[in-house]
Image (cartoon, rainbow, N blue to C red; front, side):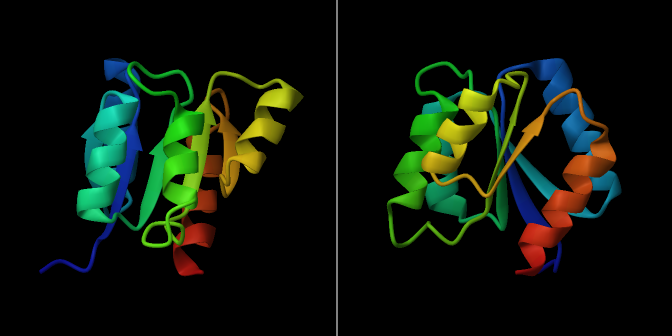
Length: 124
């Protein structure tokens, strides 16, 4: 049994997911990937990962809904959720917070920003 922290990445862009996997695995995280919101929600429920990195614009179910389903469920509300998205408008951030996201990061940010936030949230 590894003591690596497990991160679920929910994103439908293969190149982005590949880059995320490389960054996270090179920082000693175990990575599981879902390519749509429904799969992400199912995996979150079955795996109970240590943290979820969630895109907003997803097939089948958007990231806001996935986050809300998890955060309004006692069994899963403790799992930190980082919304990682191309959408940087203030109203998107506010909506993300209302849905219970623990952090909201724009995809154009440097990977260090995401890694730092992951470290903070997993330590809690």
